[in-house]
Amino acid sequence: MSFNLADEKNDLIEEKTGNGLRWLLPILLLALTAAAAWYLTGSNKGTEELTTPVAEKVTKEEAPHAAATPVALGKVDTSGNYVYDLGKMVTIDLPHSAGKLEVGENSTENRLYKFLSDPTATIDSVKGNWFEFTNVRFMTGGSKIDSASTAQLKNIVAISKGFPVAGFKLGGYTDNTGDSVANVALSQKRSEAVVSELKKLGASAKAITGAKGYGPQYPIGDNATAEGKAMNRRVAINVKSK
Image (tube, rainbow, N blue to C red; front, side):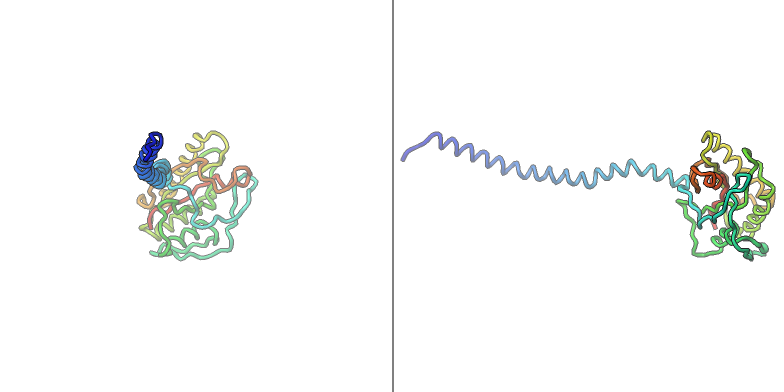
């Protein structure tokens, strides 16, 4: 029998290589499994950690704002105000002997009344239950309420008396013209002016939970058009409790 040293050496190398691969393959498989698990869980967790604070911030700010029902169409008048098409007149018979209101079917009053009187309509703690005022306006560039706004504000007071457990918050908004910081300050003054007027007209202090100016945030119209800008210069009421 002949003995070949070279062949024996090759056999030893192949045996060691085979043994090494047998040990290495399970380790590689474990590493690949761990990497896949990290990708499916760890990487997604990282994404959640980046996005969750933003979502929480939006929730605290009650945004994005959304009207409970679509805002009625209208047009811009010669003064630059947006005049809503209020639709046909309807009668609202308020509970708790708070009286009757004759208002347009697309008016703030009618939409607000429908929401408050509907037992299936729930409070939206994320977007808020916002209703744009259809007839509350201010003197240009200031926070003085136009006298033509008084009728609608009186109706809102009547609604608050008809639903005495309801709580409301006022929001003020502007278009995107000019300095955003100044716009926020102006919208804050306007929202506070509405709160003050509502209380002066008879709304209870507990009915109004606060006022906030949002400036050019949460537009409902296209700021690239005169009509959109006019729509965005507004005040809205948010139902906080019912």
